[in-house]
Length: 159
Image (cartoon, rainbow, N blue to C red):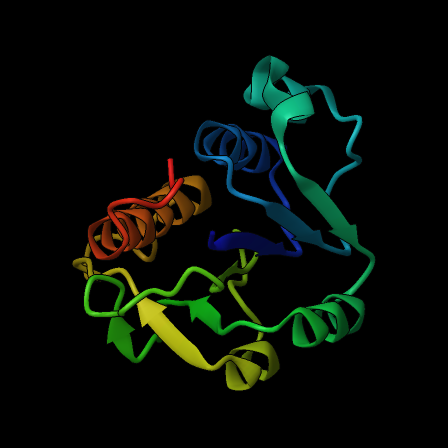
């Protein structure tokens, strides 16, 4: 099962919406600090509704702590960025992929993107819009990964 990783998220409702998507798909969610909000934030809870108990949530205080755990666990890191090298639909997803998304205001820092095994972009007309909303981007990427994995493994327990 792919994992969603939010690095330094800033806006509570985006994280809450992504948590709800993770609950609906039984996808683990990793939050990498520093966070731009407190996890007890009302907006975060409201966006996630009453689904937070169903979210497989892991918190990491910083990138170094997360990256050390990810390397021990294994799997490929895919950084999503407007500067990604491959369209998210051209990626061939694997069950052990870590789908990384940066903050709403900055995206993934260059050093984190450089450490990723792959980088992906969600194509859009950037003359009109700088980027998609974080929760939209995470959902688009996750559902494409799940679509591909279901097609490749039709007898699996993927949602």
